[in-house]
Image 1: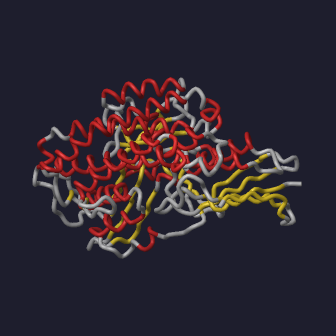
Image 2 (image 1 turned 90 degrees about the vertical axis):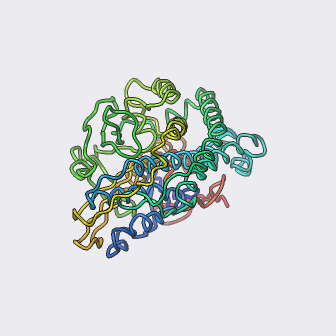
Image 3 (image 1 turned 120 degrees about the vertical axis):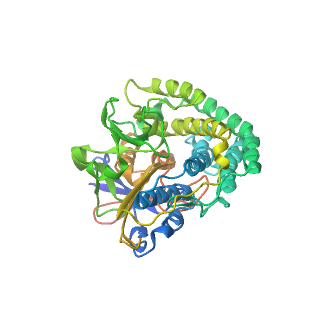
Length: 474
């Protein structure tokens, strides 16, 4: 008798979602789906707003990564004004985005994922969380908190606030970096480097014992998308788009972000409010691609900084082509933290950061503009259309988590097929399925709902609606 397992809600992610796992008559998993069950409507209620409000308005999309929306929106505004942003403003935006990478990746690794690696997948749920980890590895937890704090402080130094800074605007930024602010950042760098190196050693030391997870937790061929620089180096704010396949072959290179629609389509499913972008030339079925840290490390030629380039070479030993295991998003995040710190350290020596020429003034010169920036979770598109007065008439936001939607579904199914043998559902399976989603650090709305243990209810339901088994985690 065919059965269905429902995980509802999925939390410790930003927003509200559930997972359904389909079983055949023999209790074997046949499919799994990740459903986003909330609707927010940012694209629609931005219509009618002045273009100049959009960076501050769309930053409110998220409380964890507002900087990502702020910067992508400002870049869309640059395109509509048809201006070249002053060099100092471009560098300051880049500095803030690097800080955003550090703070967001630190939260994902130390707070949301490390308890699983370090406490054990089958550890008691009351201990398998950041508070349990605090009891056994207090120095590691404190280091993770301090690393995230460093990133947030850089954001605050530049934008005046850690969360939702109204700082980047079409044409530039509102304020520069003071000498005192530069010294504050410089003072925090040694500790931040120490923690990044510690986390990398820790993860690599665990890699042997995590080989099963590397093979099972979302390991499959797909395409990858990310920004790259002119020579193919790692890029996070600027550059052009590159698509690569799992063999390492480049399919599309140096694509102007203004023309992303030529290669990216957006599918919808009746079971989820989350759109599913895909690579147009291959269609929705074969055109699945991934974005984010794993994708960026796959598509780039080099990281562009000494320590991170050494780590990238070691990372690529996981595969002869592209690295395809979604579990290795965690490793990729740590390498991105390291290169971000190296770049921040290098940028602090640039006197242009203290320039007072920070904004290009212009009116509406184009009726459409696309702003693209690498958010911690992946490539973020802000696509605006305006009228001659600069009033927004249409908005399309292509969010990183949406671009990973097809891959998240594939990951959940792959894990479930290995661990779910119906009809009974062991608690440890819940944690493994959850972690499959946590690989991607999804961002569905704007808050982390729980620390450590994820409150879940899973019900095994027969075709007639009878509840055959239930597992509850409060």
